[in-house]
Image (tube, rainbow, N blue to C red; front, side):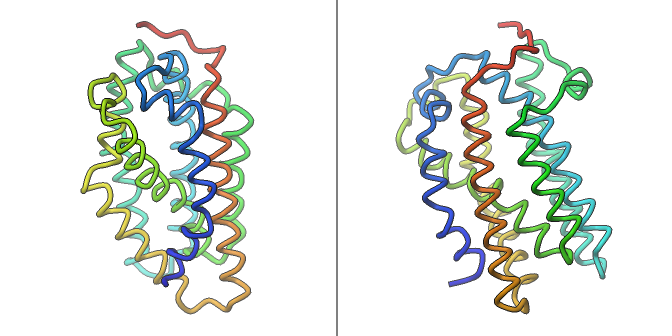
Length: 226
């Protein structure tokens, strides 16, 4: 079993709890209040800003251009592929990205991003950056594919464009590439550092769970147009 696969196996109980959150269950059933969904989009926008900084730390500590290219590809995917759907939804709700960026991160979001950034800042480089970043990427594939199996009718809801992005074969393929890179950069680590990296992966998975629970509550500082 690869190291990343080992980390995923360790975090699967947490990912299952994510799938079972009220937010995702109501999203799959099509009954999620759009105020909650809009709040999630705002929080996700703020999260992605901080997420990008993890890769900036990776670039800063990179020892070759190959590593820099990997981080650049991650940033490009977030900015070009995921952004298209996010911006479409923001327009639907009358929200502007420039206004969102002035809003505070909610406590769960702040704790999650602080955990990732601290690991990227204090770690040796790519291992910590990838173990902090991979839980978000890989859990979304696992969660949304199972959500679609559970609620095939989500295709007929306003939430389908979001779900479609994360169940696509293209998204799964890039996640496999990033997981392979995570395995490569951890391949020569001593067992003690591997254990720390696995603990970081699990901690970020638990922050994912907190993020989904946070999203069950609409933001009080966001007014949307429906």
